[in-house]
Image (cartoon, rainbow, N blue to C red; front, side, top):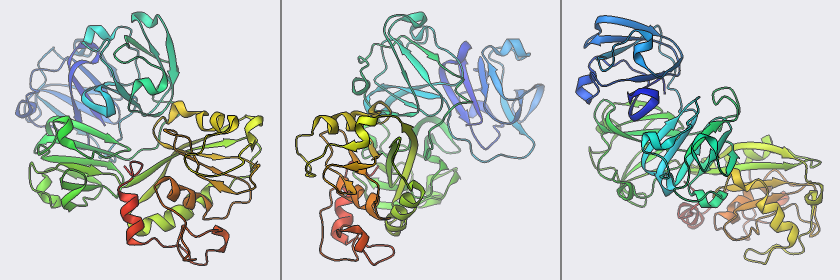
Length: 438
């Protein structure tokens, strides 16, 4: 997002995004003479007193402006905004987004490169049930002014606070550990839906996920325009559960949803067609992660599915480098070491697949997907073939072994002659019904 306008000082109240366009008349969107604070995230912009870029003008570059009066703009007097110079690519959302309901539903609030010592001032204290951290490290605190218990979290999707040990509706302040715009960020695929034509009205973010039922969030049969910030495999569906008429819009801004083949106010589900994976490397393992991701996508891309790495980390955990894993059957009771491994760094990915790269297992296999309940993941050991990672992901998605040596689910994977391996229609139906394909 290039510019965010806020109705109140200190980035509070309702907000409006401006991304990849100028706004000649903010009154059309109910934002004329309403802005009290501004964040410029990229580029240089002219802020005008009247519509059609007339009247007094103030030029602002990248920065946080918590009170428009301090930069020469009268409060509640802004009517148009114009980009200076050439247009940059659409900019993804940085910082973090707070949601009032689980699974990133309900109203939302952005925090970008500043602290929030008192969420109650903005009506957000003791109200948050899920959040997304797109960039930065953030401390989440029980009480105002960063008091009470706290926990520090980095980039990731957190669909339910309880999954990372935070009590629901119990957050009152949030603090940057390091500046959110200059530290680690989560690779992302992002779409923004808008209620009205030309990117006006209310909006909804979809980041590294789709939405199986937009009606559950009040967004069914409501979207009229959209921006695809990144990603090329998004599909729009007329009905819930990814059914009915579908459209595959390209990356970019689409001022009217009918221009991309979907009737206005008929959108009920959206899919990113991603298998999001976090990669955790136990120090001492021999890895070929670039090969593995490439091989996985050579297979899944044939069916318009992307295996997407949300990030990777190398951690020292000598006890887990050679895993005590006497069997490999999904649903088995995990050994102590398996329990530790599949819990390891789970705070970044409570509901996503985690790929753990280690040196060996006591079972002697190069890959296994026997993850404990509610902790989806795969193990990849030294000596894995180029198809092992993709094969184990197939198990997480619900696939079983097959006898066809050209199929991804043949074992041993080192004996698969096809390049890339194939999947059957039945297997694809299983994958498309998996909760891990978002």
